[in-house]
Image 1 (cartoon, rainbow, N blue to C red):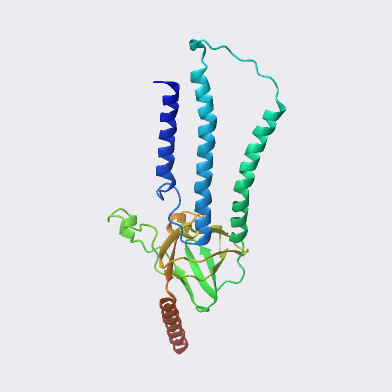
Image 2 (image 1 turned 180 degrees about the horizontal axis):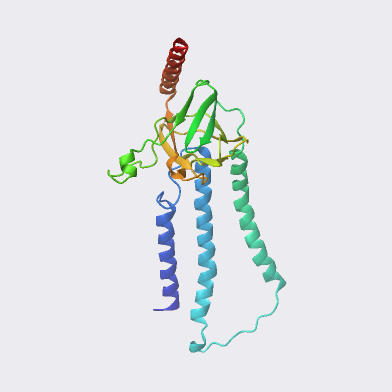
Length: 273
């Protein structure tokens, strides 16, 4: 087999490998469900293709030279001399590639930090080992609840078959309307935690005594899952995050039911006192 055939085969194999992996959520991101997540995913894939192109050009030239100009076919070592033009070229090309990648990345990072003018603000407080949610602004203002792991103990102990959403299911979902800008304020009651929902492209540390924030706008209704991603103790793996995105009318109905239930609890407490 000729050197050109070997290089072509190698290039085809690498290209097929990248193509199969680049668009698979098994190896990279889940399907993006927000503008920021989509931009992050697109830039990630673009960077992979750029890296692949650089790999093929650089290593292709190297292996071609090794095979084509080896001593066994009569070639002799060449004597190279300094070339200012060549040095400028191999410095300028990587610089231009980095600049081309930096502009969209910077724009996305700036957009990630713009939590101004949200439609709904929710405070997420990390505890060992659950999340507490308080709706501070918007239609659901005043709603508060805790969200704990709801995976059956029998599954945790291996006595039952693990469910489809093993360790990623809770008793109370965070509920938000589709198409609205949601600001999530993160903090913690004890140790470091982190609020992460990959489908929305958001992750923010929850630090005791500090307030951090993030935002997302869900593209479509559905249930999207995440986890605490800051090691916070022995049950760190048992504090998942579940965000349920609803249409506006269903969200309004959920808010009304939650407020009615809260009012009933308060009335019962008042009567008891």
